[in-house]
Amino acid sequence: MEICAKSTDRNLLLEISGELDHHGSREAIREVEQEIDAALPRKLVLDMSGVTFMDSSGIALLLRVQRRMENLEGSMLVCHVPPQARRVLDAAGISRLILIRQEEKA
Amino acid sequence: MKATNYISVEFPSRSANEGFARAAVACFASQMDPTLNELEDIKTAVSEAVTNAIVHAYPNSLGKVRLKVRICDGNVLEITVRDHGRGIPDIEKARQPMFTTGGEERSGMGFTIMESFMDQLTVKSVLNRGTTVIMRRKLSPRAKPQK
Image (cartoon, rainbow over all chains, first blue to last red; front, side, top):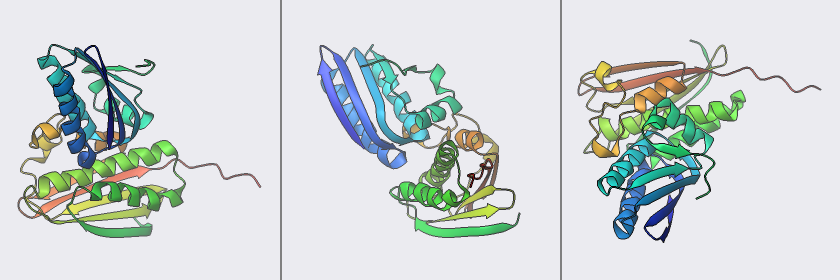
């Protein structure tokens, strides 16, 4: 699990890579929240293109980060979701709760 | 259901073993020549079942998780995940989407994903004795390469 952060003008881009299972997402939640607390972004973009595996632990992470952004009165966009992770999000019906864009270049 | 081949693995309920369990099942199932999508679906379902055992069966201790995978007649893969943990008080409730006792780290979507990615899901549980999750998935027959 690795997170690369790029921040400009209260826009924060986080590139997540590795396996977002229960083991990996605990560390990812910590790191993502640290980056959000440091940047206090208005807009957060999570680039998932490097995620090699995701299960429902990744859903918990996305919902938690979304709540954090709502508390900051900011927005969250998830982009470049690989097919396996996309099927997990679709099976859980999460695509209705969070903004997901496949084509957006962050 | 008659099995033509099987593996049985036991490991302690450490979260580092979630990735191992997925890889072990994928590696064993590869002899059935599954499609990439089938393999990913199976890995996801295994991850959910094993994570449940690690997080919920043994919340404050380490216990044993037993993973059994069988190749059955009719190109069916059967996966059994068994623990000897605290058990599920209300299985029907536990299987409902978004229900979790695992706090903010969990989404409550584990059983929903297992149901969605596998053809059949059976959950048996006895309080303070443990839980057994059995999942079955029929793999699509692949065309034999022409000689």
